[in-house]
Length: 290
Image (cartoon, rainbow, N blue to C red):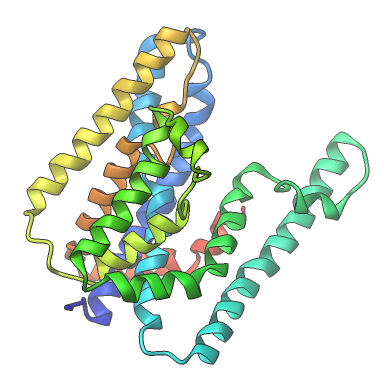
C-alpha cells in the first residue's frame, strides 16, 4: 500500500480544509437567497443555487479529511494509546462546544428573554451550525471500530467494494428512491458520516487509483450541474425551495465530494499558497464556532 508523505499530505490537507471553510461560509451565505424562491428574480435565485451546488460537498470533505488524517496515523498503534488519543480528540472538541454553546444560549436569552438551560444542548445544538460538532464527536467515538474496518478492507478490493456499495445503497439511494426493504430488514442506516470518514482514509492511503485527473474533474463538474438542475426542477415543481438534491448523502453530492477529494490529494500547492492555507487550517476549528 502506497501513501503520500507527511509534507505532501499536510499541504493538500491544508488546502482542502481552507477551501472547505470558505465553501461552508459561501453555502450559508446562499441560504438566505435560496429560501426566497418565487419572491426574487429567478436569475438571482439561480445564481445562489449554482454557488450552493458548487460548495455542497464541503461538509463531506471535512469528514473525509478527518478520516484521511486520523485513520492513517492510527496504523500500528497499541490499543491503549489508540483509545487515549480518541478520548483526547473528543475532549478537544467537547470543551469548546460547551463554551460556545453557553455563549450562544446567553446571547439568545439576552435578546429574546427567557432563561438559560444548559441541559438543552443534550437535545439540540445551541445554534444550528453546531450540528457538525455533535456529528464529529459521534464519528470520533467510533474511530476504534472504523480503524478495524479500515485495516480489514484497505488491501482487499472485493471486501472494500462490498462495504462501500452496501453503504451507498443503504445511505445514499434512499434520498431519491425510498427502499421499503431497508425498513423490513431493520437496516435504515450504515455508518452514516462514518462512511465518508472511511472513504477519506481509503482514498488518501492508496495511489492505486489510475483514473486520470481530468476524469475526476469531469465527475465533479457533472455532479455540481446535476445538483443545480435537480434543485431547480424540484423547486419549480413544488413552487417552493426544495433541498433534496442538497442533502449531503444524495448521490450527486456524494460523487462531487469523492471527486473533489481525489483532486485535492493530487494537488500541487505552491509554497506561498501553502503558507496561507496552513495559517487558515490551524485556525479552522475556532472559525467554525463563530
